[in-house]
Amino acid sequence: MSLRIVVCVKYVPDATGDRKFADDLTVDRDDVDGLLSELDEYAVEQALQIAEEADDAEVTVLTVGPEDAKDALRKALSMGADKAVHVEDDDLHGTDVMGTSLVLAKAIEKTGYDIVIAGMASTDGTMGVLPAILAERLGVPQVTLLSEVSVEDGVVKGRRDGDTASEQLEASLPAVVSVTDQSGEARYPSFKGIMAAKKKPVESLELDDLDIDADEVGLAGAWTAVDSAAERPARTAGTIVKDEGEGGKQLAEFLAGQKFI
Amino acid sequence: MAEILVYVDHVDGAVRKPTLELLTLARRIGDPVAVALGNGAADTAAVLAEHGAVKVLTADAPEFTEYLVVPKVDALQAAHDSVSAAGSLAAVLVPSSAEGKEIAARLAVRIGSGLITDAVDLEAGDEGPVATQSAFAASFTTKSRVSKGTPVITVKPNSAPVEAAPAAGAVEALAVSFGALATGTKVTARTPRESTGRPELTEAAIVVSGGRGVNGAENFGIIEALADSLGAAVGASRAAVDAGWYPHSNQVGQTGKSVSPQLYIASGISGAIQHRAGMQTSKTIVAINKDAEAPIFDLVDYGVVGDLFDVVPQLTEEVKSRKG
Ligand SMILES: Cc1cc2nc3c(=O)[nH]c(=O)nc-3n(C[C@H](O)[C@H](O)[C@H](O)COP(=O)(O)OP(=O)(O)OC[C@H]3O[C@@H](n4cnc5c(N)ncnc54)[C@H](O)[C@@H]3O)c2cc1C
Ligand SMILES: Cc1cc2nc3c(=O)[nH]c(=O)nc-3n(C[C@H](O)[C@H](O)[C@H](O)COP(=O)(O)OP(=O)(O)OC[C@H]3O[C@@H](n4cnc5c(N)ncnc54)[C@H](O)[C@@H]3O)c2cc1C
Image 1 (cartoon, chains in turn blue, yellow):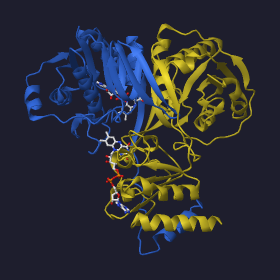
Image 2 (cartoon, helix red, strand yellow):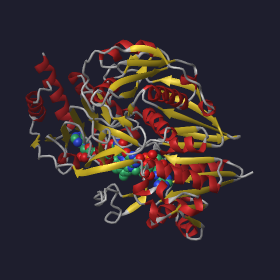
Image 3 (cartoon, chains in turn green, red):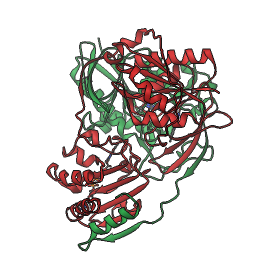
Image 4 (cartoon, protein in one colour):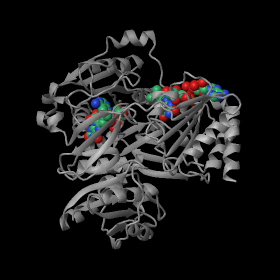
């Protein structure tokens, strides 16, 4: 039987661009180019590797996001994923992590899965919690923040490097996995991959298709509220000196003045 | 007064500093009730009481070490249920470690509550606790609230001072029954991280970091020597880590540790956005870089344009001689 792998990928504003908030305090997605969250490329890579190791596997990439989020799906398809699912609905604007995870969980159940793979964190919200919430909602093991992952005989194994220890983990499928940027460099799409991606199926789903009410998601349905967002004041220009033999001593003088020495 | 659950991060009974900081923040909102789990849980009570815990709920079971995350969620949920049944629970606070965030997140879904992660400050508000967060690599500061359920909030290290505030700290055993998911992910082996004797990166008051400019594992000795002269932790950029010059556990940045020390010294680091995401909230920033155009200089309070192989050892010598 085919191994069904679903990869969650997020479409995010480019971190090197001028990211900001819109008037309603949601992320401004109009003035900054978007792309596939770089950390999700690692998830796609591990999914493809697991699929290559399996006798028979299918990799579906899934995103919840606006129209443009198709770009993220195309990128993942051009890397080698087989098909894509795009949940897109005007009512999704402003959804928080609880709403997003609800939508993803329902879409994953609808698609069917043996293993769900996500990135360690998005590069915009950077909460790093969505995979754990998905495991809770789906009622399956979470095998998260892996820097090494393998799947064999219906068991997923991996290494999790924590604050105080490095752990080896093991769980039976179905399971939710997340991988870090230490899990292995992501491949670049080949020209052939890019051409092939154009022909791969992208299924579009709306909230109705997932039996989710509009008031469960969106800004109004969020369980959190942002009251204000202020741009951090530019730092006052610091003192910059050129080392002409005394740079270290000058720096020590500064540190002493600040009472660090 | 309403009670605040505070999840205790400890290693065999030794409470880690971020938890004591949480107690300071918790006292702004209500009476802290600490939840300590696993080996040595009861040993945490004295220090928690000294810092304001009115009660310490403890539980130990092999499940906490043998399985990932979920047993701790079951226990925190049990604490949540018992405290909210007995009175009013105003919030659940958890340190923002990778594991802490996952525990908080799963608890939040279970109890139907909104979640805020990586708060850098917390205060009481008319509609519940107000959390300050840094967004987009710390280029924005937001204030947010949880609008549904009991607020579940994770807080970054170094967000508040540790303050003594003696309280009762009565120890009570917490009854936990593990659900079916608790044993889903088995921890088959665990290798503790070796202590370097230096302060923990996220907790340190001073962090000295090296980047690609350090140019080799063998040269990290000069970064370490500076760190030791200042009693600092050592950090590294991803470029240095990827090159194998320093362990990944010391990486500062978006996918490494996020630090917020009193003083951050970057040597041979250009200041890419992903690095800045992890250190931009440092109080004082210093950089040594031979390229005057390096973006890190936009952030600094003091910068030296120069070769780190000249500047860093001279600085180290000067620090040592001033400290006598
Ligand atoms: C600056 C900022 C602050 C925010 N703060 C909060 C907050 O405090 N509380 C809150 O509830 N919400 C918050 N949000 C909203 C939240 O980030 C989104 O709802 C989001 O989709 C889930 O969180 P994340 O992107 O941080 O996910 P993470 O948990 O960081 O993402 C981990 C992985 O989950 C997958 N994933 C995440 N989102 C999607 C998606 N839309 N489609 C497919 N896969 C996905 C990806 O694989 C990703 O790598 C914030 C958003 C921003 C931009
Ligand atoms: C998804 C993603 C996540 C990432 N996460 C992180 C992260 O967590 N942390 C992180 O750091 N990066 C991260 N990065 C990488 C980041 O984009 C940069 O590539 C990295 O920070 C560069 O490291 P660096 O500054 O050491 O190297 P470089 O950018 O190569 O800079 C080296 C600097 O050293 C200076 N230099 C060289 N020799 C000397 C000398 N002798 N004396 C003084 N100065 C010298 C040079 O002038 C230069 O400015 C991430 C990237 C991506 C895409």
